[in-house]
Image (cartoon, rainbow, N blue to C red; front, side):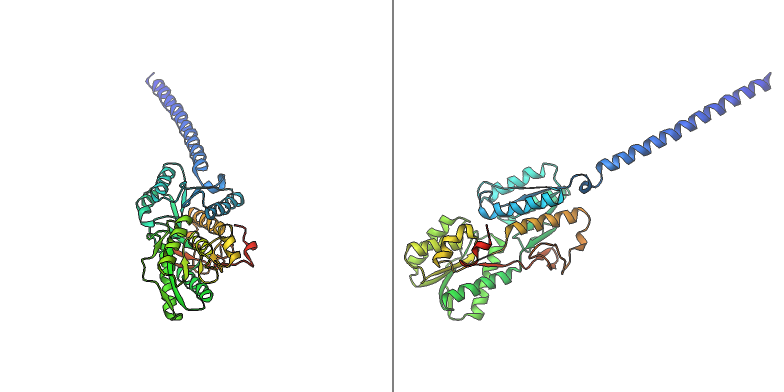
Length: 353
């Protein structure tokens, strides 16, 4: 009787063990399937409709940044990434920082920023990077609170080229002044520093007027009014060299209105949509530029490469497949292309921006 009871108990234990074993196997398989499903849902965003890349510009109403937006839109269309542009309603650093703060609070993967004041943007961009957001800047060479800063050219080369064009217009002699959007604008001041150093070496008969660098707040009316003041104070002035895309046309407007066309010349960064009338009159003999659409596009491209884990491919000589960025120079976090444009009345129709 005892033997039969023991046998019955052993059988029951074996059946329960087998049932538990089958249940464990089935449970393990279910968990494995769930994990695989979770991995697919939270895996590579690029394979599921793209990354979210927000580009923040200085001023949403500026023709320069309207053109930049076209490049970002092209990038989104070509790659399938969710790329778009945001910015303040006017060139205001505090407002731009608030735009960045709002974007950080959203589910974005990367920020591409053209900072009005890089140093003022440092804390908010550090915050973005702490959250794992990729940061790419433009017009902020030497800025380190980013994964990369990309420029259309060497800032020294651009400043020297601007001075060459101004010197040619002035006959390599006479007095001139330099203008920037803001005294805190890193790239603008680097251009002007390089231009002045080049003038002192290459054009000894030109003279920088001993004024503080003129700050025009990225505003054409301000540039126009300050240029008139300078002409009144220094009637023998021959040149204005401007970093902002509003500096040269603002000065040119003053030159034309004061009847000084052909005697005083304004050269600097500019676009045909703003400088066109002054290119025609000759008060702007030329403006220098790069295509902002392409700079917007390359910023987004760099961000997506980093998000894909391919940031280590970005080295000197790398070809982004974008005009002017076919063989870039990389120095630490600084990327520079070869995208300088010199625009005058003869070729301005080639640049519809």
